[in-house]
Length: 116
Image 1 (cartoon, rainbow, N blue to C red):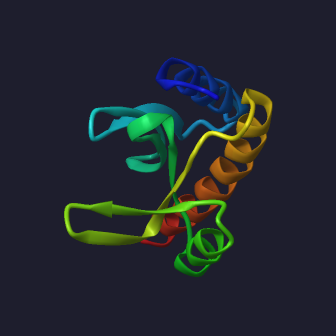
Image 2 (tube, one colour; image 1 turned 135 degrees about the horizontal axis):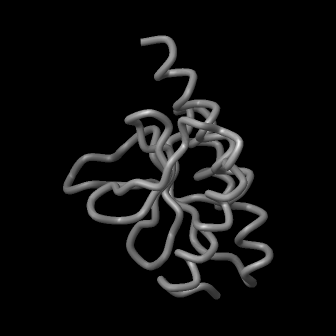
């Protein structure tokens, strides 16, 4: 399973997928590497090399209920749109899941950014 170093490598591969998107850049969230569109982070690496993504509340809840993602809690506050995706059994499986999540998170956060 990916450790923090491997997780960063996977995030960099995902970042390359967005090379055609001029507004997507590597940034930081809580001093952890992540991807942002404009000034809004849509995914970042959290504790234990998990990918943390911002998704619509209903989708996030369904993923948690299905056991695919974990709810994110900061302090005592449960973040309803932020969910964590632990590493899978292999880097290949992790990358496939994380790529899909990153695309969905990007679409969601970009739509929020453009509507505000």
